[in-house]
Length: 73
Image (cartoon, rainbow, N blue to C red; front, side, top):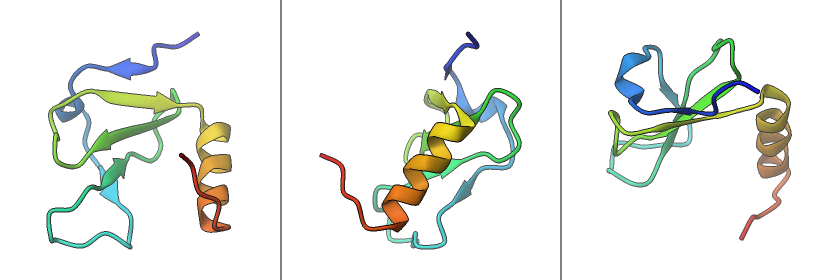
């Protein structure tokens, strides 16, 4: 199994926020497309913090569920 944590998000380039995010300093996640191990996700308020890497299929299913209006506790 590939490592699912990258200790320092700053080593990766090309992060993007959701188009629904704004510049008001709220809580946002950023993702990185095209990573070979899956979908890296970081907290936009901690750009040098740790990254969680989700399997691509799992991230796709999660994003689809959110778009369909499902909520998660």
